[in-house]
Length: 116
Image (cartoon, rainbow, N blue to C red; front, top):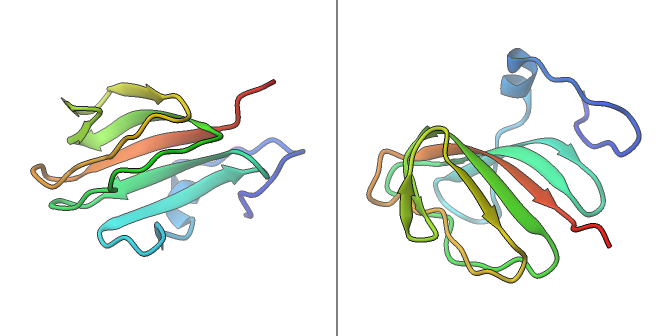
């Protein structure tokens, strides 16, 4: 199943999500993700930050980030968050997912282009 689509619905069972390629996020060590859906400007996926690692401070200039913590703990925007926590980061806001002092975390993320 190719998760890249803009015109067809996507339905993924837990097994299908687990079968998606687990790829490093850029050159970061200890940070991986599975892309569940993507268009030219937006995407949805599962991001894992391993214990003792962090995503690193960065800013998105065009898209908003939405994150739902599924497992583990990490510090996001200065607050340590655990399962069930939600974060919205508007474009232009510097942020990090820091699991350097926790047992790591897994988040569902949406990287969405704001509608004009």
